[in-house]
Amino acid sequence: MSVFVVLKAGVLSTLQDQGRVGYAHLGLTQGGPADYVSYRIADLLLQNQNPSCQIEVSVGGLSLLALTDTVFCVTGTQMPLTINGQPKTLWQSHRIKKDDVIELGFAKSGLRCYLAVAGGFKLAKDFGSNSTVLREKVGGIAGAALQQGQFLPAASTYRPLLWALPEKYWPEFSNPLELGLIPGYQQHWFDESQWQQLCSTDYQVSALYDRMGYRLQGEPLLYQSRALLSEGISYGAVQLPPDGLPIVLLNDRQTLGGYPKPGVVLARHAAALAQRQQGQQIRFYKIELEQLEAHQQEQHRYWAELSMDFRSLC
View (cartoon, rainbow, N blue to C red):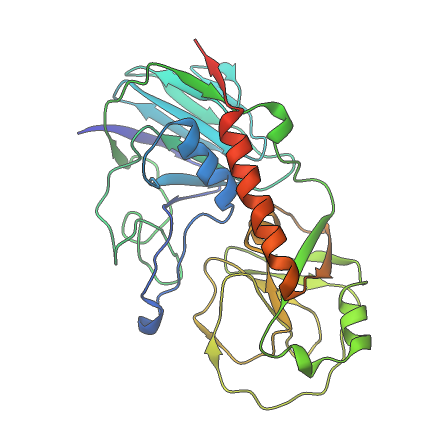
């Protein structure tokens, strides 16, 4: 098995695959790519048949030495990408040869990139997944972020065609973000005026945000506190702690929680939130259950059109 060598680990780089499912009863959260849309597009560009193990690069600064000939791509926020010092484009696949050096600069907007190789990185799995969760010290390599000098096994692979994602599909992570909120179990704890406040307040990402969740700041939502037993927490759940400021829970969330939850954010919106930085504007809007099918059909169209619009490169 050929390998890559980590020359520089960057600010925070972790190995992630599709996530860890079926272990919440053991207290293990799902992990997985914070921006699953960019992660999935990387696999599509490389024609990977199954969700692969990729590197999630937060903020930037990663550098790898290739000890094999293969194909790779980088998706996500715009981090400057070079191969042997020559600038390259994100959102398309590239061939590299043994002794080539891949470098990623630092993001000016957005937060995370996904560096994927054809066939994925090949490492032993913890509880059925390569996804790194730092708090629980599972996944990746010894449950930790990548470190300088580590070896990342990968197969030597050739692809007869290279593919690029048309620029019209490239996401813009500097814009204000609207989060579609599906009402949940405790929706009736909040009256109409409170729902109106929740969906009309311009929140900002606070200084407290990571892969576990995003705490927002803005006008607090005051509500009558009630006793609530701890219960399982889904991806994208919006918690309201006693201070009335929402927390949107993401991949590395705790498995149980006792704060009331008005609802859960659409998965693709939660993925987009994971690309936002401190101070960026966030607003909620309510999605009724009868509107969900239309949103699902929209997503099916998006993925179908995206794949058909891939541009082949020589």
